[in-house]
Length: 104
Image 1 (cartoon, rainbow, N blue to C red):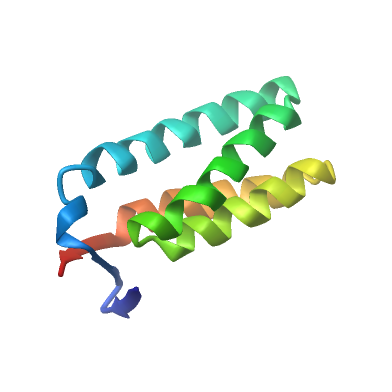
Image 2 (image 1 turned 90 degrees about the horizontal axis):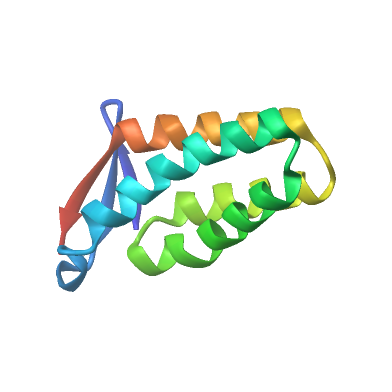
């Protein structure tokens, strides 16, 4: 579950996942680099795969926004919409800068 408070996005995450969350978020930061590199090469299939992976994993870790971004990115890559991919990768970057984890 996610809430917004004073410029921060609060993500409520199951305490059992506490050890996994730093690595998960670090991998999403690596995804940003990979997506920009794939855009340079016009490798939409790589972007589609990354988006699909985020779509499948985000909610399971408590990050519904990452699931949403992944879904939209996968769709944009399938349809060859570079600008929409850029919009979603920027959205992911902003989200990762603003998200604050609360373990429940």
